[in-house]
Image (tube, rainbow, N blue to C red):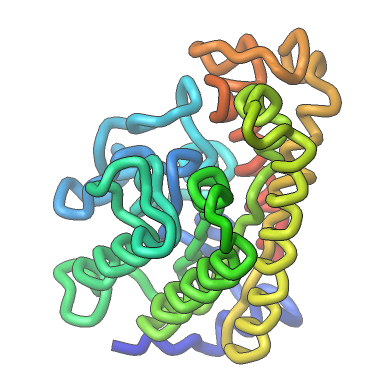
Length: 295
């Protein structure tokens, strides 16, 4: 099933609106792929997103690594214009391709496997293929954190990183070919500024920052190629570094004593634990997604 973009989408993205906003700038269905920064333990075989619970299952906000809602929870429940649903395929610990960079456990579903699951349930012939259209759906992907942290040890990292990026956009292309036409691709955030990044003796913060920067450069170059090859699609880049730095450069404005403490309540500090951001940063990310996708 190919879900072609209708003229309405052109109106929303171009000269103006022909209808009132719904969801998030007209997107009422949001499909997400990623790792623990995005995961809320949604199961595609369980209860689907609905009026009572915009993430379907488990109970809102799901099981997260933020101390409460994460960015996708906030996007569909706080920063939406009207009712919006999230279908979250993200899995904690995920890499882009477990063959290229193995995750911490073999059971962790990579981007490759997450897309396959999406196709199984929401692609052509899937039991839920009719819940979305090209016009009403936004597809977001946030990978690279675990690829960098798990993969930089390789002596051939300089050749591995391009392989990761190639596979990344191959998966985005598969989602496009299934009918998606609106994409948000997240850069790797400044994990070198996380407590773990700052304390990692084998890859000091300054070096980790260089690895992340180079990975993001590859990501942006391939995003441009994908955009050029798919002129029927809207593709946005979310600069996670800039968003994180808003809070990290001014922690007291967001209720934290400094930029490096962490607390499991998700609010006392900017970090939920030594690698995962708390609620303030997740709110900024959700706002960033809404801002970057504004027509």
